[in-house]
Image 1 (cartoon, rainbow, N blue to C red):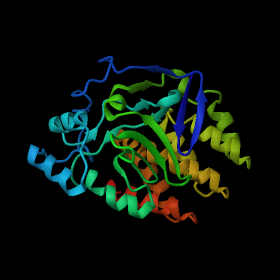
Image 2: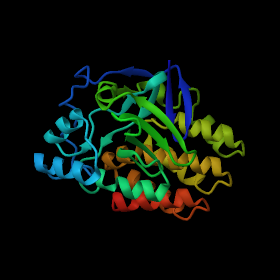
Image 3: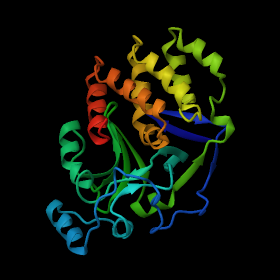
Length: 283
């Protein structure tokens, strides 16, 4: 059994099978997904002088393990999709920032824009949830920050430990809705029980039938409950690279419609998140 973090809530899943990447364990030099076409996070290569200039500019020291992986590739999509944090909480993550923009250089802007803690360096995330190095106690630990709830969760005591806990989540057949059939989900989505709707939205977050799922989410973007729309916002933020990587025209079309609808949401945080996704992925 694992706990998994989706949006700003923690859920227990008993049926998910978690396995390590076929290469079994993360090594400090072998984290990147090298066959990802048009990787939105990969920046041009950097030199030792670039590292030194960044550290001098921001008055901090990057973890040696971060420097190692970024010397090989300056940011990008990971061959892993989750990290096991303290307390066996599973956090979705599929990319790391490189040095530059968009990347680590965006950290000061995000800190100011979202009123985040000052002694941090954001190295992954989108919208309203991020992974960051926390320098407040000296040697940096890794934390997970959620702007909506102002919650800060410790993930690992160091970046090296964070890398060692990266894992590949294999949803298997049981992840396609877990406790619900599609017919049951559709009936729940047409109702007004916002907590049950949120639960089912998250339960289907890893379904293989992306077109069906995104079609249901599109309908729910007009739901009266902020809780339901926030759940959709969290799923889209976590899974957008997956949907874009599928490259199926109908999937991308549905994704864009969801983002456009949520861009007009009454919740300012949701509108801002959608704007950031549009800009980052040129949607």
